[in-house]
Length: 144
Image 1 (cartoon, helix red, strand yellow):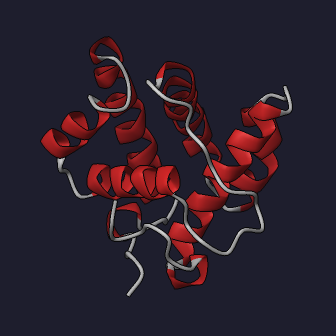
Image 2 (cartoon, helix red, strand yellow):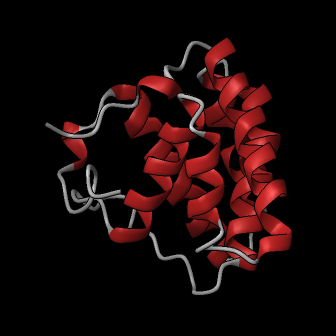
């Protein structure tokens, strides 16, 4: 998490920026009462990542609805990575590099224990789909 916290968005690699944009877009769409998956579908399809969206949506929905505290993301145009975004980026990176125990331990601090496995599974499936679509989710580089 601290690898990403309060760093400029421009220091993320392209895959990290897309993931951050997707998280922000999901949260902002949900906050307006719109269906986040429907709102993001065109962009995911444009990046040949339509197969990623169902599991990404499920992971974000579970975290959003079950988190012990409200997950806050910055506005779309914000140039810095905020606390919850840093946490989520670190989780996505850890999922991508196979740090399952770390992912589950971190998620246990974010969502109730009965939700950890479902979130981890959705993130894992989304990560695998991202890899197939050509996104280097396992290689999200923290800012230098």
